[in-house]
Image (cartoon, one colour):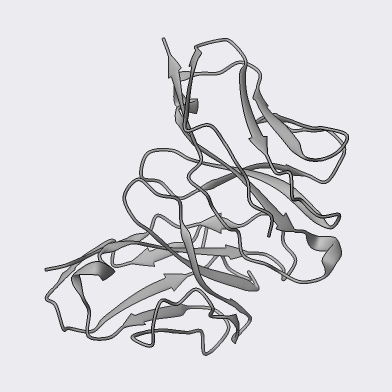
Length: 114
Length: 114
């Protein structure tokens, strides 16, 4: 799976949008971009994933550049409970027909400030 | 069950002892994953199963580590002759299908080898 690069840490004011960047310049055509987060010592939690189109769900939006070499996770109105480590992961997806494990990097520590 | 359940939540063992960590995935989930997470780092893949078949064990660090899922449901991760470097959080995860995009993680088992 392609490697990803994320900033080590970011701050965001409560109520503002949090924009978390991720670079994945070696991504291949059948690899999806996944985002997970880990709040304190809890297990990682799925947020969203996408292939090439922008995606939105009740938790976040995912913006993928046209060349697919980078993406941005957007939390539209960050709350204190969104403070967590956010992992950007590139993984072969369902269209490739087989389950593959997630390979986590170091992630971005997002701190939402009151 | 409602979520991925792991036991014990905390285990302290003496160096050289064997330990067994149990994972009960979400009912009906086909794929089951084991990860290890050291403090301040992202989860590291160990092995995964589809039903009772171990599909990939490339992440197991050495032959002291083994895992099984004999009936395609509950899984056990066994560490023989534990060493201090084995101390970590061991996380289990499951997904509904072999190609499931959403992987659900348990709360983990903290292992401390003294």
